[in-house]
Length: 593
Ligand code: PEP
Ligand code: MG
Image 1 (cartoon, rainbow, N blue to C red):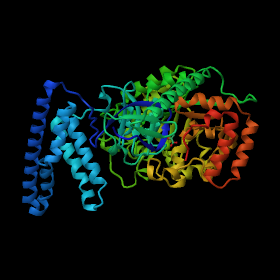
Image 2 (cartoon, rainbow, N blue to C red):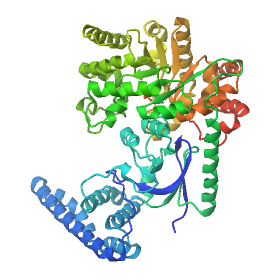
Image 3 (cartoon, rainbow, N blue to C red):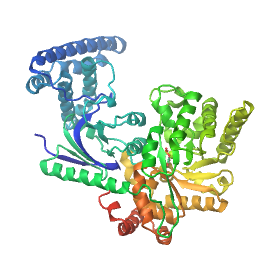
Image 4 (cartoon, rainbow, N blue to C red):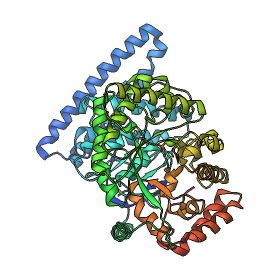
C-alpha cells in the first residue's frame, strides 16, 4: 500500500471531493484502470506483444531514415528506445501486472513506464534525468498502438473521477462532464487563469499550481481534493478520509444555508443597495446564476463560443447564441456582453489561424480588442450579431483590453458603421444600447477621467489589471505568490477609476475574480463600488457579507487600508475585519496571495 502524500497548491474553486484519480498523459489520454476477466489475460498479453512489435518496427524505420539524413550518430538516439522495448525488467513488470492484477495492457504499460520515468527523474545523474522525455515518448507510442489514434476526451470518463493533468485548456475545461468530474488538479496555472475561472463557474472543486504532481500520481489512486484550502491528498489514510467526508458534508450544509439568501436583497445594514451580477461563459450557466441570486449578467465572455466550436461561428450562430442568453435571462435582467477577448491563454488549439498565431509575449500581444481591430470582418460579424440580438432584451456592450483612447474610438467607429448598415437594411436593433469598456490595463486606469467622457460605463477587470500592474503572468504558478489584488498599487488604481466614474456620473462595476473573494467585499464597498459581477457560486456568500455591514464601516476600513504598504498587511487587516462580521468566510479558506 502506497503511503499517504499531501500536496499544497492554490485552491481556485471551493469544495471537497473524494474519488479515484484519472491522470491525463501528455496527449490528454485518460488511461483508466480496466479489469479483465481471467479468460482475457492471454489476449492482453498478445495485444502487448503486438504493440511492442509495431513500435519496434516504427522506431527501426525512424532510426534508418534519421541515420541516412543526419548520420549514424544521430540515428543512434533511437537505440535507447529499442533497448527499452527489449528490457526484460520493464516488459516483465508490465506482463506481471497484467497477469497478477488482471488489468488491461494499456493500464499496465502506462503504470510501468510512469514508474520508470519517476525513477529516472529522481536520478542524481543529469544524463539519466534527460532520458525522461524519451520514456514519455515511448509511452505515447505504445499507448497509441494499444488504444488507437482516437484521442479519447476527458469527458468520456466511465466513473466519478478526480481529473489530474499537467494543464487543461479553457475549452477542455468547459467540455468536462460535470456528472463524472468531481474535482480538477492541475500542475500549472494561477488563481485567475481561465481554467481556474471556469472550474469555479462550473462548481467543480479545483486546485492548481501543483508543480509536477501529474507525474507522481497514477490513475486509480484514491484522491482527496480540498479546493477551499488548496490541498490534495493522495491515498489518504482512514482518519483523513473520515475527516474529509465530514468536511464535504459541512460544505454541502454551508451551500444549502447560503441558498436561503437567494431572494433577500443585497443591501447593507443602512439600506444601501449593492448590485450582484454574474460572469458567464455559456447560456447554460444562466439558470444557476439566477438561482444563486444574480440580478443580471455583468460579464458574458463571448470568446468561449469561439473556443468551444471547431470553426469560427457564423453571424447567425452567434446571433442565436446571444438571443438564447437574453431569452434565458428574461426581459427584466440586463446582459453585459463583452466583445471577443481572444488571445493570450484564450486561444483555440486548432482553431482559425487568426487567433492561433504563435506570439513570444502573448499577454502583451495581439489579443482581445487589438486582434479584433486587425481582423475587421471577424469583429464586424460579431458586432452585427450582438446588435441584432439587442432587439430582444436589455443589452449593454463592452470592449475588452482598451489601452489607448484611439482603440476605443476605432471600436466605436466600427460599431457605428455596423449600426448604419443595419439601419440601411431595415434590421431592428437597440439604437441606445449602452457602450462601455473594461478597465484592465494600467494606462486605461490612469487615464480613466478621459475615458469616462467617452463611454457609458466602466467594468474593472482586476484579473488583468493585477497582472499588468504588478508584471506577473496571471497563469504562471511559479510566481503566483506575487500576483495579488491586495497590492496597494492595484487598490490605488481601482480607487482612481471609481472616482473618475463618479465625477462623470457613469456606471462602474468590478468583474474580476476579486469581486468574488469575500476578503475584498467590504473594502470594495468602502471604495464606492455598488456593482459587482462574479462567478455565480460566489454570490450568496458576498451577499451575506453585504447584509452584515454598514457603508460607514466599509469606508472606515478603506481609509485604514489606504495607509498600508504591503499586500500582506492589507490582507491581514481585511481578514481581521471580515472575521468580525462573518467568521465562516475567513476560517478554512485558502490564502489569497
Ligand atoms: C479581468 O481581466 O478581470 C476579466 C474579468 O476578464 P478575463 O478574466 O476574461 O480576462
Ligand atoms: Mg481580462
